[in-house]
Length: 333
Image (tube, rainbow, N blue to C red):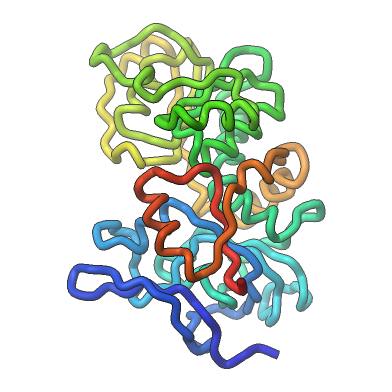
């Protein structure tokens, strides 16, 4: 039986600030959508931090229940065609930005946002992967299908490697047999990165651009989770014919580069958009996340479990770049 009131973490904009607190809200206020999901797990993403900060420029709804992803079980199937009790995962689209998200005991979403959880993945494992892991898997998929990446043919650089996307990308690539170089600003995380598959760990200062349009060729491919000057450096150091899958902007949204990496080395810049990924493609990629793209070090990558009451501190940490791996959220804790 669905309760009339549920606990939720709410962010509300007030006079240029954002009030963040756990509230009791009516189920009928969870937003539009014909599928009601009992949320078992969610997780903390950088975008969640932006959605709950005054200058984040992400949230398009106030008050907002953040949480850009969730895993749980179907309570009211609506037009999804799924039976009640079916485990599902929901992420992307407007979830946690312009539609109430996963930081609540229940979520109401449109049927075409709902992906049945593939066999072999629990709801907790799905959120240890989450939006970040899905983005990492999509990055690897693009490098292989568009960029021609193959194990044994060169090193893959992963920037921002201690974050959710970066750490999962390191592990997926290592499991697939790639030589992985991981870049991080956290020197203390070197052994942790090696434990999830990195062959080499670089200090972030080693990958700062010099201002030259091209640098020494170093990497065959790259997964860039940082953007800004870091992405400019990656483009200038890719080997001839290399590719970089870019998904992040924690290092800045502007990209100052030249045409030379593209016209003299034939490199490719592959944009990674996990938000509007079509449902059919999204469902297939989740199937692969339970199979050949599965990150085997999920228990190592998922470094923390919290309840709704601990979310404020966790969101501050993710914005400060202080998180390691994935922080899982259990709304019913």
